[in-house]
Length: 307
Image (cartoon, rainbow, N blue to C red; front, side, top):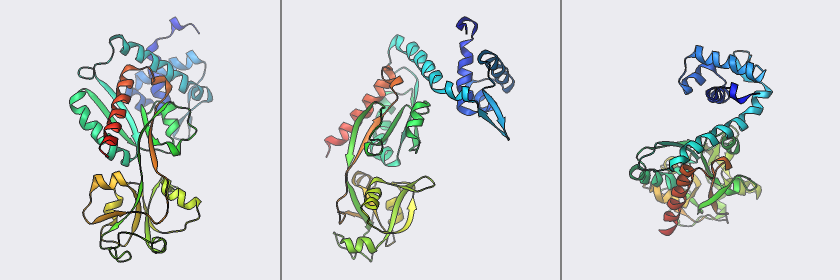
């Protein structure tokens, strides 16, 4: 293929088509009408000698050739973008940039909330999109759907993506101060822990438990799970006025400071959680991305210093 014969704008359209698998949505992203996007798709099919998107029922699906183009195309477009942006460096007081960060609501509350507050003055033209954590962490990085993922290192122990440590935290039991099963005690026996109705954190349709609950399951500790919720932040509010107990992270319960909810030592040992920042190597030398990662790291360090 002769590159001189290819309009590089077509590659931007192709990237949107591969992401959205929809001509209309891809057109909205790149600012083209549906007819112009359809014309671009026709041209791309001629260039690649492949239909790229085929109809399956009422939806469009990618051909195998299109699937193989996803990562190299995004890498190429990312490098072009970085080259253009690095000409004058990155000035957060002036330059416009949008970043997307995937993180749990715990990480948003404890770490990213102070980051957003800091950037309001430091980077007035920077937009931060916060996405909930996903079971497809590494896929999101590969497909360039996020700039940074913040996850416990325990969940990605063998990841080959570049990363940096941020903060660690420990688990506490939490309950309403008027919980009748606890009776106002500041300690909780294992017997009462196992007998109490339990509120568990779970993500996804299969209710993947948090690290503490996974540890207990592996250890064969069986609890009476009365309810699950896909939010760390909601746990203290759901405990109010009930006899439920739950496992929460200390920084979260301190930050929320929900009246009537107490945290106390669990009756058995639980491993700490270590939050870590991951990104795709295509962004490692991007000056704006470096700036963002530095600000996240500095925010994490400031949190650790107040302990």
